[in-house]
Image (tube, rainbow, N blue to C red; front, top):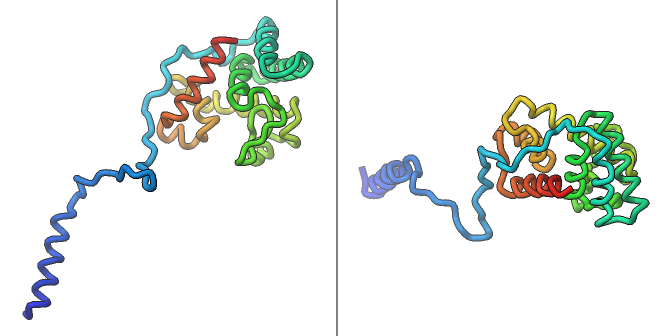
Length: 201
């Protein structure tokens, strides 16, 4: 065996043993290569709203809250749509209103960089799946938002803290949240914001 062949074999053996397990590896801390998002196995500990709480008495409080952002006539129209479809689909209207407040601040013309539209910031694909033909229409968007939230609440009702998981799934996607039974820290802040708005309404 010549010297070159022996050197190659020696380098190969050393590389195998030095890389086994790669246990000492740390994610780079530079902004160019951030570590992957770490998911939480626990969700918000804020008191959970009752997802099915329905009463006409909430309409005035929802309307008053919307008037912080919109004029009285528009606030009344948005509140009427939220309450009507919340009753139709048996979802807490204050929860829907808090979600919409976080998503768009009740702006029916809101448009995100990803193409999400209207009050509940529904994506075009979500609109198609929900039968929403105009994502900027107040009534259609409110109906679609309530239907989508209802589907998420039903999907996560078998788990602990289903409301938090459903709200997290509204932002992060239901498959991701169900796979992890949790969500990222940024989504946790989003969920906490919604429940905080709910409690102020």
